[in-house]
Image (cartoon, rainbow, N blue to C red):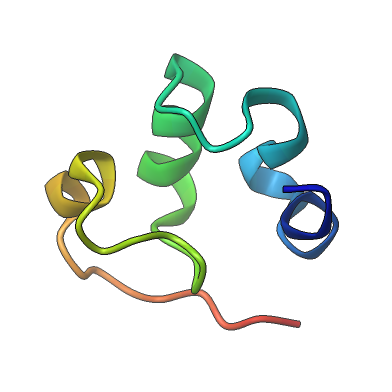
Length: 56
């Protein structure tokens, strides 16, 4: 999760380790899923496939 936090800091992976905390769900609502989000994760599924953020 450290590498994910460096690549996608807006999601806060370093703080919540990918668990569906309120912070993580809020980031998904704001930014949509990034390439490392599992499409089967309920929080991502609820967002639909609005867009996929590309890795830098």
